Image (tube, rainbow, N blue to C red):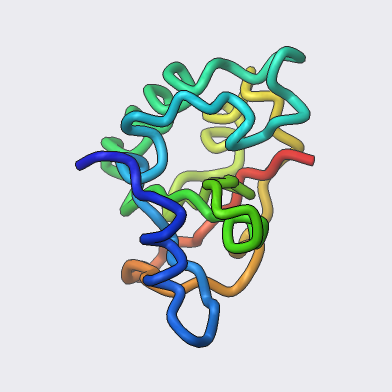
Length: 136
């Protein structure tokens, strides 16, 4: 699957304007805009998009991870360009494991919820929590 366009996101957001959580493929495949996620950390320690995508895909394949999605920033609607706000990881992994996942990403940390209201949220299995990896 190729990168989703801002127009497709706006269409999926519908009349309510609630943006979808999007897959790693939808956000990263074909995306060469280094400023599309964590722009303030690009050039200051955040890995290149290709490396960030590869690391998130490894996490997504773990047995203790149900899914990984990109949370878009509301600016996506206004600027008509993909702007990643955070990454959602649905997992049963403990704090030390999650901390190791984000080491070197120049992330601000994780919070146990989504950063905004989204649609197209996959099911959260019993015992799992959705954690948002955030950059400020």
